[in-house]
Length: 252
Ligand code: NAP
Image (cartoon, rainbow, N blue to C red):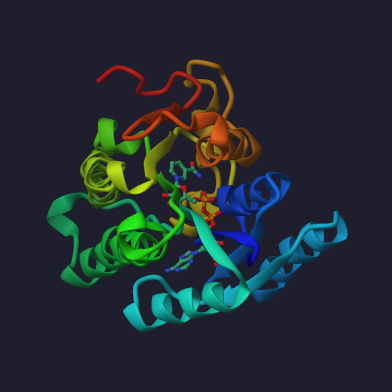
């Protein structure tokens, strides 16, 4: 039997990098996807290999179907897919909705929604017992923004993460009888580079004092929840959304 592997989209930095390390701790071979920062992906792969695990880095932009197919072709060469951490996602510069261009919206939804859908489509094709697979686990990465709405900042991003919540519910039921569990983790403010990429490098420092726990979370803290949902310890958990937000936006 070929080795069991987990694909982590955007697995090279931030939450995805921590999730890649956690997937390796569970004993899986890890496909570390990245879009442009090869050095960061190679570093995560080296960390996994240096601790006795197996991993490969695979470039691909999830907004392009051809790239997603290329990533999955690399997975098929590497082993048998039993897990997907559907993590790749972007924010954009703070803007009101009445300022947003179609170009901005198209990019946001191409990556955060359509990319996420094409990634789960390809995972289900490989893991579903309906298609001859062995089953598996999908962990989508949502955001507390889906409940907060992010007014004046990025309502488009918040709504894209609302789509991830709904996809998690629907897909989990669609494949519940086919050996696949589908869950989501909904992080709050986590100290990663994503805030700088949206033009707000000081966002964590500015918000920290206002958060319930008076601090941001770490990528490791989110990855531990992902690790549990990927693992057999969560064997009866599907369709769940786990808030890992230090209390931020826990009320509906
Ligand atoms: P990050 O630090 O900015 O890392 C992003 C990762 O995704 C990198 O590995 C990057 O690759 C990759 N990536 C970006 N665009 C991609 C694309 N189009 N195709 C494939 N890979 C792509 O982000 P993060 O903070 O860890 O966020 C990860 C996920 O958590 C996102 O879905 C985000 O919305 C969600 N989230 C984050 C927070 C937070 O506060 N940080 C809160 C709630 C939810 P390169 O290294 O090659 O650029």
